[in-house]
Amino acid sequence: MNKIRQWYEKISNFLKDVKVEMKKVTWPSRDELVTYTVVVIVVVFILSVYIGVIDKVFGSFLELFLRI
Figure: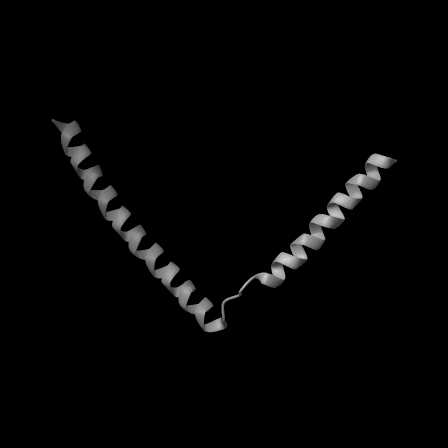
């Protein structure tokens, strides 16, 4: 029974600490959030196009090399 009580107290203390720490967090404004989201989407798109082109080029070289 004592172990269950200790477990409960540990969980309770953890949740209290989480609540205190969450009050310290500086949350972004709506404008910042929209800006960051757009930046992430644009960067992911650019990188996916870049990786796709590189993959296509290396695939073509590999196909040419294997024909020889």
